[in-house]
Each structure stands twice: as structure tokens, then as C-alpha cells.
Length: 303
Image 1 (cartoon, helix red, strand yellow):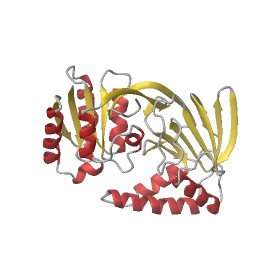
Image 2 (cartoon, one colour; image 1 turned 135 degrees about the vertical axis):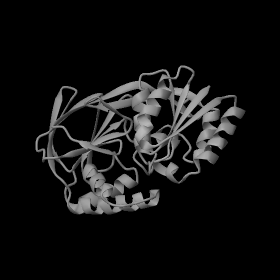
Image 3 (tube, one colour; image 1 turned 90 degrees about the vertical axis):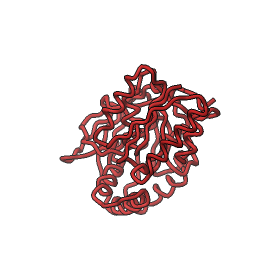
């Protein structure tokens, strides 16, 4: 296969990676397996242009993306419903989509897996037409990301520390909103501190929240019913242990499409889509798009 690797020098752990040495090693591994590789190293501002160019290259079979979670989401959006496969170099903070696909979390190990990998089809989702691979969320998560982004950090560890600090402040003063959820001919009216709608259901027992089956064909809808700080601490503790179905602080539904209407929408409210803070519309239609993305995974993954 012919690979085009688009490496965002400003994204994730690639900011501190020797990209010349990494690129040479990647070339060696893939060529020994009979593949060809072109590498395009870009700044964050040129990422989407480079990805669009790679997706249009007739000779390419695989577009490999290296960068943070936002880079992965951008690449998936461009490749959705196309004939090119996406290969994810796990250079983000949590690498949740890569984990869902069974991709090794070391950069070199991921390249080795791609050398003998296979292509499979997985799901994507969208919020008012904007594609995402992991999650659309509002309430607590949006507040946490907003607080975290106002802090300074220069490394993955610094980002994790900032996230913990932001989580503490959010738990102590959680947001609250009234929400209508319309799905499968029914309507749920609820008051919640947080709502997450995911591209497939989270796996039970996982230490991080990511999908057990990336081709499950459903949205996971997670409504946080905890409101007091003590209950929210319990919610986060259960989440960190991967306890979702047995977590009495969260209500879980599944659907192929859900319309979210925020009935009490403060000015300048935000949502989070794949880790990126976005303006929140009063009404958002979230849909699952089954098997709309081709991905390169390890040979024994999802077989």
C-alpha cells in the first residue's frame, strides 16, 4: 500500500519528538513490509490543507495522521465516506479513538502494527453535521475544558495536571441545565450537570472512557444525574473504574439519532466535540453514521 503520513509538528507528543529520526524509522519499517511512504510535516495551521491534499491523492491507500486528538478528528472528518483508510499515530493525551481501534500506544509499535495491518470499517457520528469520532458533550465537561484551556502547560503531564485541577473546580461548582432529549419517538425532560453523547457505547471495566465496539452502530447517551459535590466525586470515581452500567449517578440510553434541546441556555454556552470547545446551539441533532470510515488496524483487531 502507499501511505501518506501527515505529521502535525504542533500536535500532541510530536511537539517534542525528533520528527526526522521518527520519519526515517517509519520509512524503514513500512518499506521492509513492501509499502511505500510519503511524509508531510506541517504546522497546525496547515493541517487541514495537507489532509485534504492527501485524501485527493489517487495513488494513496492510507492517510496516516500524527498529532493530538483534534488532528485525529480532523483527519477522520476529511476521510469519512471516502476510499482511503485512516491510520492513527497515537500522539494525543488520551488517544481514546486509537484505544478503541486496538492500536498500540507507542508510536514505533503503532507503525510496526500498521506494516502488517488490515483495513476495516468503523462508525462515525455527527453533531449538527459536524463529524466526530469520540464524543459530543455539554455541561461539566465543557466547563472543565474551558477552565483547563485557560491554564498553561507544555507537556502531556502538564495537561493532565491542569485537567485534574479543572475537574476539582467543576465538581465544587457544577453547572446545571434543563435539557430535552428526543429519540426513538420518545422525549426525556431532565435537569443535569452533564450530558455526553458518544460514538458507540463505552466499554465496561475500561480505565478510560472509550468505545468497546467502534462498529456497534449506536450512540451512547450518558446523562449525569449527580448534582452535589459528594455525588459527583462518586460519579468520577466510578467512571475511572469503568463502571457505567452499575453507576447510579449516570443514566444511560442508546439510539441512532437524538435531538438535544437545551431549555436553559446561558449566553456564550459551549459544548465539546472530540476535545475541542465549540459554541453550543440551543438545538443539536446527533446522528450515528455506521461504517462510514475506513481505518487501518492491527491484523488481529476486530477480526
